[in-house]
Image (cartoon, rainbow, N blue to C red; front, side):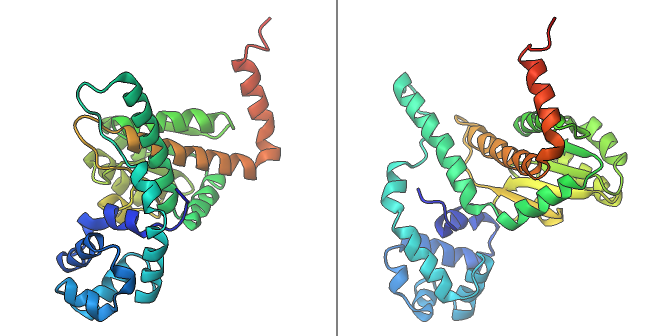
Length: 287
């Protein structure tokens, strides 16, 4: 799949946070994909039983200046649909052969990364890297599978001598948020963007004057709305069978991007730390 500004992924991920009228337009677009590039705004409004203004508002909600740029993006997306359908997400099925499980999980993880790259804002990544470079301290907040992502981030940023820590339970998060100060960076990891413990910690961190970065799914959410910088991920619907596998891989990829962005920009300063930590972990300094 080509990595580009993929409108179909955006519609899929943001559908639930649209207004009822915008959702009617979204559902109409998804149901009539092949026809959409040939429809005027009036025809789409009639087909979706809305109005010209509603269709335009939907286009702007999805990040387009007008109807024309929206149609161009739809046309571009249609060109890659056959390949995407072949590589579509597949949930865990009872009794799957192990070879099928290996192929499906690998493909799902690849798609999670590709879809995330299509909604991840380069401008927001740049802002996040800038905040991390100028930070006095970095603190990661996440519960459950998101907490594992935070632990991974703590390990990575510690390697370049950044003062950082991951907090993965509600009580310690509240305490850590209370002790934040101006110049600190707080990174909140939550696929849903609605985890109560994370949102409570964010409110406290905001009052303390810390910079707030969210890693969350591409959708309107309380976490996204309240944060200074939003790094979006895109994954398939989470089910009882598959759990948080796709979102975890997507979030880990975003953490890797942030770490590499900071380490690359400060390479002359941090290379000595990277060398030291590599050598000690490789056992080269053992007597």
